Length: 197
Image (cartoon, rainbow, N blue to C red; front, side):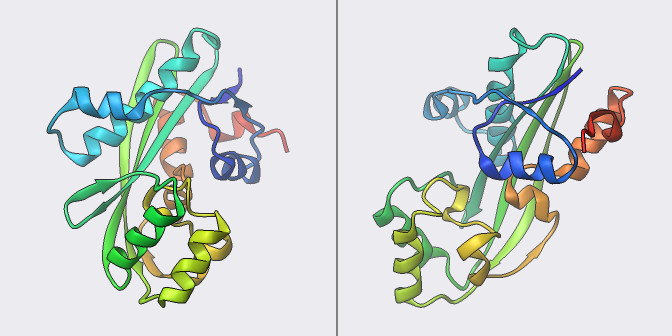
């Protein structure tokens, strides 16, 4: 039995590897905008949980005897749910809107095993620093935040610009290790069942 990560996120892979797990990587390719459009007006936690499950569903047929994990993160800022900025200009715009503010990063998790699901969302409060225009532009041009929910990371260059968090730091990086442990327990499995290091 293996742990299959339905994600191409290097941060999620890093968390699992640092936790002693060598995941099977099976990047999920879904049309996130289409999934969100079908959902309509639902709570933000439902949106990220649904996206996480849609990603996990792409790997189940290929790995029917393994644990499949899908995740999705979005930032809730001023009652607006934001995903990845993708461009330098959008990253700059978002950082100018979020600097000096508190927002909430929602990370949806969908874990499948043996025909059963555990789906949950972790919310972590993020306090953004009052970052200068020059630093915002330099950070955006580095490319690091372009494919990250909320246009930031806790690690690497982003560590300069997050004043504090209130919640699970691993969920901010992309995958809540404590939540994954609890999901495994629901299936009668232990985290150490997957340790390879």
